[in-house]
Image 1: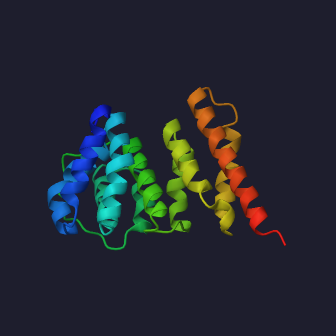
Image 2 (image 1 turned 45 degrees about the vertical axis):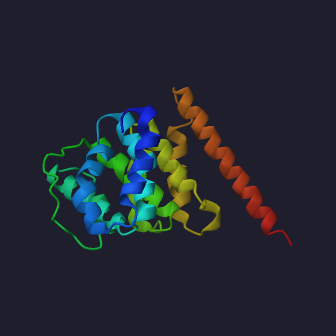
Length: 211
């Protein structure tokens, strides 16, 4: 998955192979490779996995969502990652049956995987953003990795103005002062696009609610 020009073919093949298989079969066949790529130090590999295989998996096998989360939790415990206490409230049932002993990702890798997990699970309506998600989102918004920061902000801004959850506004207020003058032009461009998108959403909401 680290070879960008092959990801489309690899994803099409993967979708075909996981079609109509059980979650247990997916776990035995794919979970190790899936988590290894999602937590890879190779930015392209983990990005491609998150962008293509993660949503494909969640769409085809929704039950895999809890399995992926449990695997992240198990890895974070074994590596003494500070994100363990962030993931724990989201766990429905702790399962230690994961043969992932040689996976020792950095904290940034686990945080990235957790943010992408929240992104696609909420997009596909598998889970809802609740107060339990705030610590992970706050870590993502304050990450030294600009890609993680912008991906987290995208999650926080999604449907912000269609809910009464004040914690979203709090996170945005915490984020803005520290990101007003970023040195990265790519980050500035993505931030501008997200803000413009939010403004459009506000305008649409106001129009919908006009008497």
